[in-house]
Image (tube, one colour):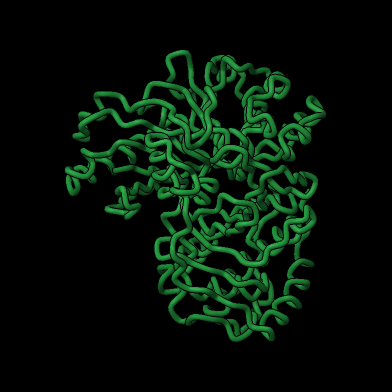
Length: 481
């Protein structure tokens, strides 16, 4: 048996997987985000531990025999967060999250200090990444920076609690802006640019490699017969790729979670940082992932549901399974700023085209289309690197909506595929990495593609209508800085 633990932004999700790669059980526990100032986004690391422990406790209650047999554990998690620890390995402050936009000025400063940043990391300095956050802390909270002895991203902190060891995998480390993505190792020059050193970084491993064993007292707490091996694991999107077998070049997929991304595995680096294409190491050796990333995806649907004081399911139900035409309402999904292609943490969302005749369904459809248009921007900047998308799988919570997948198929004008359990992709991928760390099996034998349960093909007339609307939608963006 194998466990996959996904430390997301909105929840911790855990799946229990057997030797036949069947999900035996899954559990989740919600998390909250704090935003004390506009553009700030933080989370208390104690939440992650409490939620993980509570979820595993619940699994023990319902599936004690299966949990006892767990041999390997994989971790996936939200990327880019800055978790700063003191000499006693205790958090000095809340974690600054991936969608925090406070460090725009520090990004400019970091690129000035380190001219080779883009060539080394394959990325442009943006507020979402970890390194600029440390410059912000050094400037605004110097006493905390001075006390910092270890910098971890969220899932690495969870691993530290579970194992007592500070270890990170190269896919998650890619999102720090301290990693040389070609060498898959820390860049001493990059660390020095933020007044840090290797001594303040975790040890690096590949995602499918053994990392450390679960503490004995925790194995006893959950009734495990041995001390399971914990794999290197992966950032949430690379883990999602492993979960759907997207390990070979060209296997494009879309993640529709709290944030969104269009991702393509490659066996070479095809960087385009000037157009905000992300370059990350994959969770398996000798592979990378090129991605266009948007900061708000399924969270846009959650936002409009909260605003209208109803559930997401109630908003989606009247829309049916496919659109008949683009909505008259246009939506910019920049509720937390935007990454690809704008790199603009200050831009905000917009509803355009409202009238007395506008009803709720038109607004909801417009919101879904706005996210799809933002992913079309990602498609186009990936195409500039030579990565042309012919079809895509869709994972994440948003993949449950047939209407949304039909919109995506027509906006991107390529077939979209979904899986039966697409929303558990990252946790399932983490479980696969946990298995590989124990068995040493061939990666291709374990990381197979699950069965697609439905395909959404574009309609020629509708795709043409969306292409025209996309041009109009792009004219709505106005930089605020």
